[in-house]
Amino acid sequence: MMDLLTHPEQAEPLRAECISPDAAVDELLRYLSPQALAGPRFAITDLEIGTHRIRAGETVLPCLASANHDPDHFADPENVDLARTSNPQLGLGNALVRTVTGALLRRLLVRWPESRITVSEKEIGWRSGFRHRGPIALPAELP
Image (cartoon, rainbow, N blue to C red):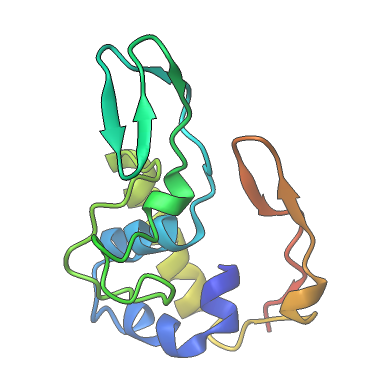
């Protein structure tokens, strides 16, 4: 909701049913990446990723937030595009979560079209843990 309320031009196509709620949720998960890191993985063979060498048995901690902004996989990755057609985002979002969240976002935007955040974006505090991140609170007015 934070991104949709601070960028109303993104909310309108979702409100008007011009884009799929599932696609919108996938894009918001890609852009905001609330799960910043995946659980630890262990290399089973030696491998190289870019200029980094990982030996068999070493622990790897993939950064999903970084992968979701990789310009090799996403056109214009630093901007939200709810109509993005190719979105292999790595955020969590099983079918039930995606469906419920998409319906909720759309319903909030339709029911309260004049909603707005009541503080500046810079005033919104963020919980930034080892693996998860997100706003601590989202002061908003739903007129």
